[in-house]
Image (spheres, rainbow, N blue to C red):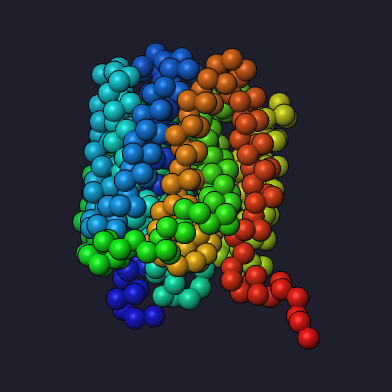
Length: 398
């Protein structure tokens, strides 16, 4: 590994860590934010819809922006928007303004949606240069950020620390981290030449028609829904559905985040040994087991333990499937962008759908929708096989 490649890898680790720290800081304060706003479950779903809308706008435009300007500029703009969104959310909560919180979440989502796609394009390129499964560990730093943010958020929730001050400090940390590493990301990753932009070519057109790639996107959709549901609703599920107090609900989310981090840091070894399809299939099954226990077993200890299975099961879906998308054919950047776009639909439909269902049937029973999607994803995982796995599976012809 060259020094430049090592710096690029470190930069990607830091840039994944920053949004993880921010989102968990927000998530652990959702019970406090809800109380400050005096919002019902359905109203919280509408407020969270701001996060979904911002994410989808970022996702839909990120591919074109990366192709035009390169991944570095999009990551820079996206991470800055995440920090700005955290400040606005904190200010909205402090003033009791639901619309302000929704706008802040929209900024946060815009940065997450656009910046994360660009960052995954850069991460996939670094993985290709390293020649081994590295995206899970990169996403592991996102989860590590969520763990540290969740632990801090849990402690600050317990002592009644002001939400606005908390999120402003987090934003400052994110901006400092961004400034320290952004120059290590090359300016031209993912950017198309002028000639390529004028002549799309058959390879780019075929990306949108590739059935295997769309199936990979469906796997991302389901497992991103499982991950995103925990990010949006897990503390409230534990508080409203299992009777935890706000601090313990945040603690369960910290356990979930720790399981996500563990799964991602060790998952690359399983991918290298057993293949992408097997790793994704096992991940989906474990996640489904965790969700089922949270939904159907009315016991606090079981629910807390099930969060570990839920986290482990959701851990490999996004990074491994994105790696499979980038390796599924020509024009890797476009394929990663498409797969991420399909997957991020979960962040658009998830919060309001679960808020609506939770208002009518309870948050625990609303999770059945997520469980069904995760079980269905098991049957789509063979599409994630690498070219080598496909060759090995073909019968030998004599």
